[in-house]
Image (cartoon, rainbow, N blue to C red):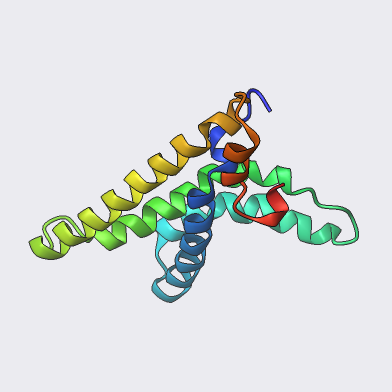
Length: 137
């Protein structure tokens, strides 16, 4: 596992990013927001061609290439949560604190998984704490 890319397995980025992709798709369609379409472009270009090959095995490790586009969608939604520059100051403060808290949580979870990503030797109990879902074992 040495040399594994950290973004490849950061669960909060993937889970929040998946939610952000859904929100981005809805806003791209409803608001016709070019920023949303730009953030979605890499996901669309990378995933839609696979729909032509539904009879073939699609390996999930290819999804690591979607990480930058997923993060763009997450950043787009986080910017919307914070609010526009020059907007209501209280809303921007609340949104900024919320987004900042999420980013701190993502960093803490990343630190928690760092030993697994870097192939460090940890005992079985520590390893089992990091296996949140049965499919991870």
